[in-house]
Length: 466
Image (cartoon, rainbow, N blue to C red):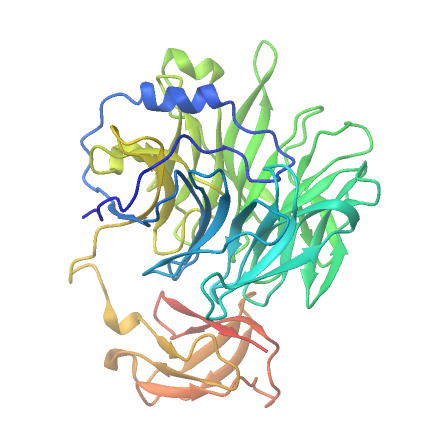
């Protein structure tokens, strides 16, 4: 099913994260993706499409939470660009602060807190944190800089840690930052003068890019953990990998650059796990004449190993892809006609398999913001007894847990993001209450936890807030 368009669509959207230090994708490649999309394959699964609505002339989704919260940005006919927040039902535009003409939202957590930037152009501005407060536009807070004039926030986790990049005094150098409770701290570099953070997960692991002392302004994929920085392999002289997203399980999505036989390099989508490349994808052009100059990158990965990103296809067009069950598929082949997927940003897939994407409806100018959902599972596909519900969630003092009758008699185990057991609750009922304390009756810190039932493959996410 597809919701009808609720307003005019616009022209093609920028292909770079607003304020990003990474160059934009050449627009000709994007235009080619529409002109050369080619015939659709007959595949079994067609995503259900939700048009997020709005009357803007350009619409770009960016990231989606496991609960289906979506953020992005839209440009209106008067030239103003506003970030948007979709709560599963309605679209909210956040407006523009005084002295600015655009806002962009790039990351969102399960509490509905969103981050991005505000300024007067795509390139300038400062990092912002947006929260819904009951007013039409919500509350937008500036996070400041590290002494320079520019910054951008790119991701926020459920404990309120924000990451991004900011200029130092004089604007000649940039640093990745982590912001929490009103304090912005810089993160270390591999060397050199430039760097930026792209994503932070539930346990505080951060990915992004950093220059070195010997490679000029070229940034290399890194992961920050407990204040230290580590370069992601493989390392080839002069060739830089890029990292865009890190899942709560530690899986990292990005791209690797490899020497090309005969000279030059290849860019291929990659997933890192435990510090090493665990999955390297090809391109949608593999096995065709376009393969020689084709590239791909991954911008998101979920708990099931499904990957989304962008790839050049056999028609030499840059298009979104989804990788699942060992197969790399052009996303257009899984959309109901006549939608044409245009671009997926960082964190564009959640653990439920939902994907956010900008897309074109032929005959309508420009792009729309879409939420793609896998077709509803049949009764034979679901196991209600495996699911654990928590109310309220997020919570402060405690939360009530409920599960199916088939799981009664087995204990409830609460674990942290590293899998360490925090609390074991008696399993003689279909519901119980966790008071937010560990086995030593100590209050656990704010953060993300999981409740599991032995023998079940499912885990429910719990978020404790201050």
